[in-house]
Length: 275
Image 1 (cartoon, one colour):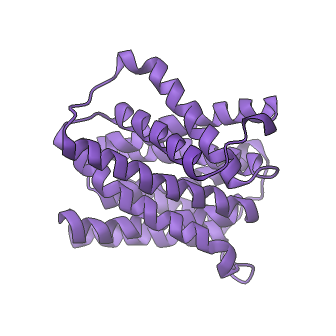
Image 2 (cartoon, rainbow, N blue to C red; image 1 turned 90 degrees about the vertical axis):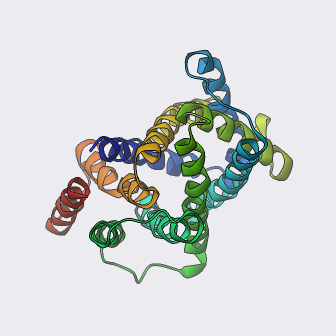
């Protein structure tokens, strides 16, 4: 149950981060925000690192850390890219497909498998999340605009595998892994993408920092959950983000509530607790 609560907590913080990402990308491009976004989070964690730092450096652990960061750099680029041309209600369900890729990669690479019962429940959750978020209206979807989301999902699904290996082997803890990940992604972004420090407004910097706090919490909770549970199941639970976007939207934005969404949300939450 502990890893379930951690993964669901990750989904709650991710829902807030997704809403803030859409607000930022109304006036910015993905490559504009990528570097400064992760630099801000990396520096924030570096300042706090005396209270949590733990990393047994070996050639293998360092190599896997660089690999995770490189994969996630590309994943985040495409993550922000899909929000440039799509509303959060369209982008989020596509990004929620990541667990499907994690199940596949976990089976192929590290033989991290679950029972058929848990796999079927996880698959049901993934399908419900996609249908819930899409509001059963696929005619407005354009494959070209959704392709970045599919790529991002596949990459996030893949990066969970070396992350699970590192965390389970006990050579690094969750906040230290995310600190290095954020710093290395910022470095990759600096090398390969734009880093327009002077083109952002004070308000945008404030939003980036504020959003970063939610993202840090999201990923630290996810990494702790990965330490305790199966990688595919953990990502399935952490990608129930659209449910919490819906709840927050209903509470704070007075967005429309439908019976279909209420039923789907209840089913997803029930399945999440059962699994």
